[in-house]
Amino acid sequence: MTLAQPQPGEFAEAYAHYLATPVQGDVLTLLETQAAELGLLFRTFSDSQALHRYAPGKWSIKDLLQHLTDTERVFTYRCLRIGRGDSAPLPGFDENAFATAAAADGRPLGLLLADFQAARTASLTLFRSLPEAAWLNPGTTNGRQVTARCMPYFALAHAAHHLAVVKERYVPGLM
Image (tube, rainbow, N blue to C red):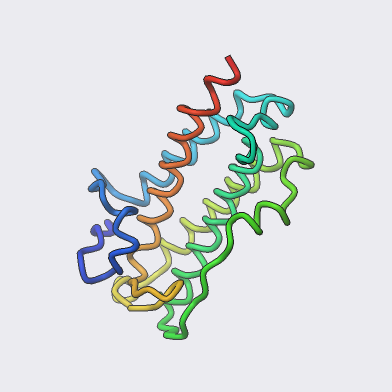
């Protein structure tokens, strides 16, 4: 199954940044590839390096990885609800409150990475299990309209954004 890119009208304008760059290839395969890339990058950091923050008040590398895991789970949960035809509005979440509550700096980097990989694997399992008709089911997340088909694309774009941030802002501070 190749999941076509969401089209305008399937998502509120506030979500357009997730879909600004057209995806070249199958999104589910790209999610697998991205998980491997993320694993390679994060395995280069020691536990002490993963406490690095590129500026005061910014998340540590561990916090950022936990954020990726939390957001992956939120996108997947939204996809499940919308894909199953649940039309109840789904709330947003406060990423900074989640980061504080997660206390990622107190966990080993290897466990945080394994948690992300498990979340991504679970996402892919769900995405591959949805019937074709489910992908166009409409829903509301954070007060905005969206279809189930948007969620894998959001997950891909969100993680890509943060991988770029790690490479551009965190890695130079560790050299």
